[in-house]
Image 1 (cartoon, helix red, strand yellow):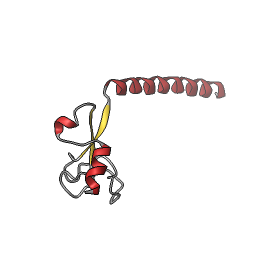
Image 2 (tube, rainbow, N blue to C red):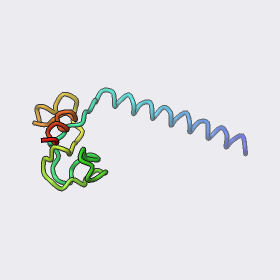
Image 3 (tube, helix red, strand yellow):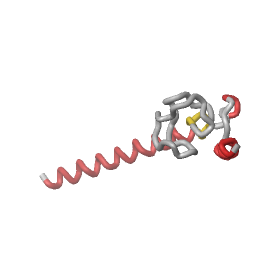
Length: 93
């Protein structure tokens, strides 16, 4: 019985590693970047630059320069968004 448990565990581990490497490969083709200033209220992806909250979905204002969402790499400027550096500069004004 003990050998059976070890063999089952080993097989499950190998299968899990295969699934993880497949998911990682899928991410490489879909590169994303943070785009600031495009998130609608309650639709941000994580903590904001100003530090008023630390979690997704907590933005209170529309299109806040310190709020961000992940977008496909290279599309942020087309959406009217800013990079992190540009957003930091805009916050200081």
